[in-house]
Image (spheres, rainbow, N blue to C red):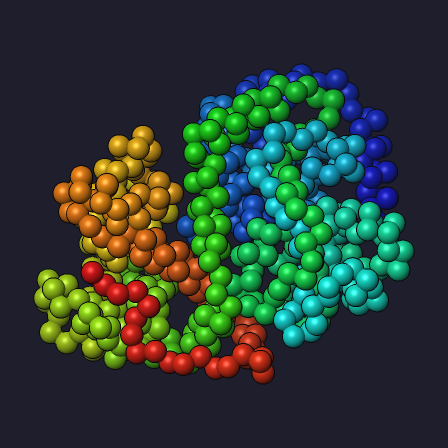
Length: 473
């Protein structure tokens, strides 16, 4: 299949006629046409509009050029380059690795990210200590990817290495097959793996096949390099200004902290505890204009969906409201789940309103969550510190670096509201982002039968805790 693809590509290249440089075509047309993948690591079109790391970058580049962004999506990475070479797009932004094979047919721009290439297996099936222990066991990978190129190169050293290529799926599907025990191994980039492991906690990295694999945008060959040059300048400036880090945090920030047992517990509690309160979350979310899944994620971080939860500092209920907060909201019984959920929704909505109008989503949500945890005034202090440091107080990446400084005398002595355990709201937000992402995935797939997540025999059942994970100040 790979040979046929490359032969067809070569034939197409031979028929190309001389055309104006692509940048001139883009400016004259008033459109930047980009081909990408329908994938969480590239582009997703949801009821809330398009999103994804590749979309954000491509949209910012189109805005700089002063043209409209037109996105063409494909289901598989194997379809990306043929679309580009056939002239159906001006560039490809699809999380493509810059492999030697691909360089024969397209031009790559400045690398904007790196990923590690993992060989992934399921916990409990036996972790291979070397490739020799993989030989003879089923491996399935996505056709037309850099993962296939890696296996081809490894086959020169391990002639008995065999695998199956599937052109009709994405990596996420193959990771699900590994988690279900339908195939022993697949290969996934670290970005994709770090997202999917929250949904399939049994997944593990068996071996790192490559470290620091470069990702870049691709451009058609023999068509002038003006658009490529402009894209390179854009990405270099974007990284220098810290905007690339913001994009990475937006889509991958929640993956930094992974708790295997905690994630397994969350999925179990989704089935056993959440149904008692789901309608309340949905009603409260509708009343206060908040995604009910975000409210549920807050509640899980606060109490693990336990209506009677209480912390040593006296915060109570499923949303762990303080006595002062309950009084402010007019709530008499903080332990009553409906009171607590509607009160928490109202309090969160209030924090969102207090965030500066200049803060855009999703940073607005992360700052409101931090304010829900540590208090809005401490978030204001963190914004002041960011300004002193020359950062951007409207982006969560900079705020998350400044909040921990509120525990250092050098900084808290200079701001109006003083000391705070500023590392706590950062952990708080990261945890909620992870829970929220899992809830989005679970609710999107709940029409189909939920996958069983049996606790392995070597993992003891967790002890139910009465207190919240993060104390309220």
